[in-house]
Length: 493
Ligand code: PHE
Image (cartoon, rainbow, N blue to C red; front, side):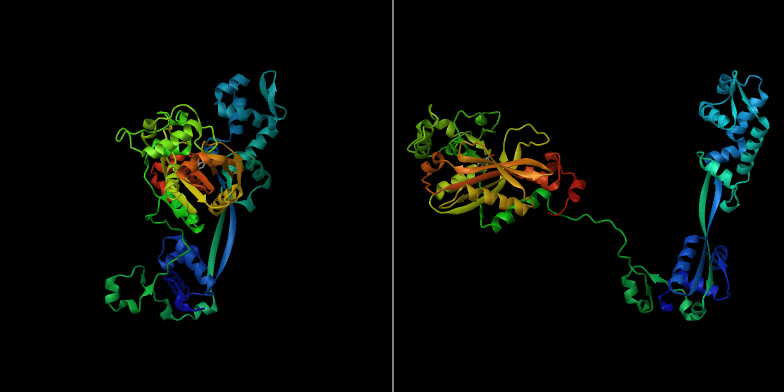
């Protein structure tokens, strides 16, 4: 073993030990090395032992000591001794007398102790069959307590077992005693190797500019020690999730659509064949704007929607009936779903096959609670393609969720005014099915007025709901309260 890898305390200890062969006890080492901390000596001895320069002799001793109750008993007397004295010195050793002479926490266990010693109530008085043996038993116990501390090996085994069963009177403490003796290879280490050197813990400019660094000894870093992670900037988990969703759709051949959230009821609802008297259109469900309160729409468009809504236009549908209102159609609002954007994209590109997605904010007048926010995000998408069908829609959604890490997905029949068939998408999470969004194939009442003749698959899913799954949240509000501690500790998606 190389003597040059010795640490300073090891050098000092070995140097001292080279002066004398044979056993060195801890006290002797501490004194000779001028240390006050036992841990340094034990550590240095351990290191020297590992390197083969000393041999360590370890002895474990077990000592019986007084515990908290025992310390009290040693000065005041054991409870049974005090009880017995009281019984012998009072003429009325009754239960009520005992209860007034001793505190409750002593009286209760005391009666049990006496009983086991053969002292019981007889005709209302505590009495022993054989007072001499009671006195002897108590004296033996008291003597044991008074003689503590002692080595376990020296203790009366019967008494030791007895006191081990009683709370707080004694404790058995283990102690390791070490001694060291120098080995031949320890003796052979040259004095030059035992010179203590100043270990450099920090490299400074001064050190590098001087020549000292050449002979300096450097303190090694222990890279296995635990350390705190310095807080650094990072994406908000919602932003990270959006990036992830975006990456998945791009990878699946989709293009991203980004558009305004200020929209007309016409595009948000009428174009999607949502009847003008639908409850979701009410003030209490939708944020309508005051400025602008309305946005004008081309006459041809409004009248095409009017035809569809009133009697189904040329689609063969019977429509919703009633009278369609242009003013209702032109009311300005904050979009309630991102379908308002995909439908406009289709209106502008009615003939070209496409795959388009968006991840964007929508607004609904919801009361805030554990699972609802008035402002949230939707993951929207459409596929327009010759031959597109329900099977393809389901496969696309399943592929998306599988890439997100949720392989178990199912669809159930649902209803939306603008799709037929319509589906609800559910994902299995912690053993339960959770609804994450809607999907379907656009109805002719939606596609025909816009000149679309190819089938269009469409879906819209909640992003915050998905975030709750990904991040394991019970409360959706956690995402937006800017809880720095929580944010710093989120997994990197
Ligand atoms: N827009 C619907 C919603 O907000 C979801 C959906 C989109 C349903 C497209 C069918 C087709 O819940």
